[in-house]
Image (cartoon, rainbow, N blue to C red; front, side, top):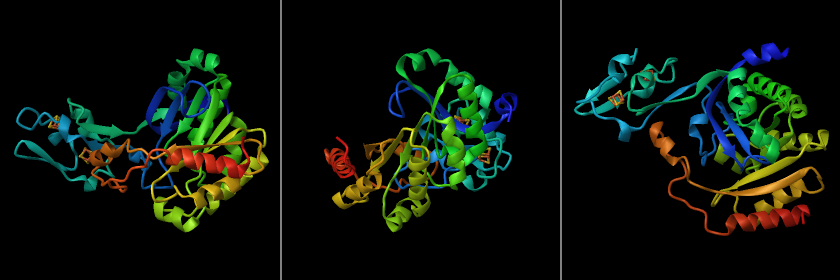
Length: 309
Ligand code: SF4
Ligand code: SF4
């Protein structure tokens, strides 16, 4: 594909976050794309899971139907009704709604649109604004999600255009797709953040909705086919799911012997729980928390098992 065609490719993006220092080397801009084959119980970006733009409602910002009711006539499905001074939104139609007209009509930011169709050119123009920081820090652009390769054509066009602009690239991936997607993306990448949630497929399926065979096979192929590409395997340490010694040792064994891999244990956090409420969903993890020191213990066991210093 020519670079001109790449710039016109569109995809659905729900956030562009600048000055990140957690998702790859140096100072980075994170492009969050929508769509994911997994639905992890602890997902801190539930708005990323569905491929299309999505409506959400923050009732605390609504100024009340006695003062404002712009959203009500804006909805083509008559899904919004006033009930006294509050709103009753019947979300059964919202998955079909392309325009999310209620959000555009709301002056208070109470009705949120998660996701916007954007061109590669538009996204890279935003990313390139911080080019000076990337040069000084060794940073660049990280595509995250959701799963970046769920919108494969968009992700590849973003990576090619970033390369054309001499911006270093990374993806944060769940690894769950046919190998050819990663095989095509890898030569365009300077760094890969690869999530491994569990080595036991049944447990993985219980927590994420899918087994892990494809994920672990893709990780192995990535490490072996592209030995020069730095890969950081990350495990979100989830209480009662993968915070035990046996699981940590099995992850360490998986990574043993590869020179191009590093590992980071990410402590479970509860950021994003509010977004479940905005989306009218229950947070699947309930009230659990991760005791202090557990993620550090997992990190130490994995490092010991894989033979890292
Ligand atoms: S997202 Fe669409 S269908 Fe749902 S309330 Fe808003 S305008 Fe109506
Ligand atoms: S337009 Fe916004 S502020 Fe006004 S009633 Fe609807 S949700 Fe509330």
